[in-house]
Image 1 (cartoon, rainbow, N blue to C red):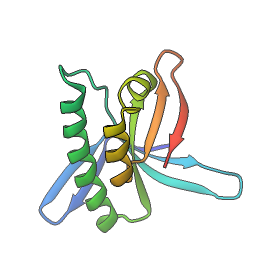
Image 2 (cartoon, rainbow, N blue to C red; image 1 turned 90 degrees about the vertical axis):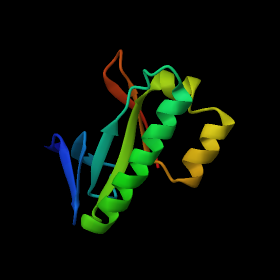
Image 3 (spheres, rainbow, N blue to C red; image 1 turned 60 degrees about the horizontal axis):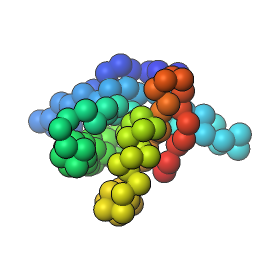
Amino acid sequence: MIIADPYIIKYEDAELYADLAAEKPIAAERKGQKIVVEIKSFVGKSPMQDFHNVLGQYIVYRNLIQVSEPEYNLYLAIDDIVYLNFFQRPSVQLITGQNNLRLIIVDTQQEQIVQWIG
């Protein structure tokens, strides 16, 4: 269920806008988890430059959300082709792991989530 579109992240002098806030059912033994989703398409000339920009944005959003609304978890939504062709690179795997990126992998052709990571 989508709660906010866009989701406003406020902290003292900062006001930022993530793409969505939603409640995600994650398992039968858990109720729901409140999440904020930032959707990225990686359509720039350089996927690494896109990743660099996304990573900085993700870290800023995550840090402010942890302080202002800690019941929410931030996820980065990307399409399955970007995940397979770029996010499997060893350098990207290292960076996503060290920065604890939570990912939602989406099949944009079928318009469905294929994997939750994190």
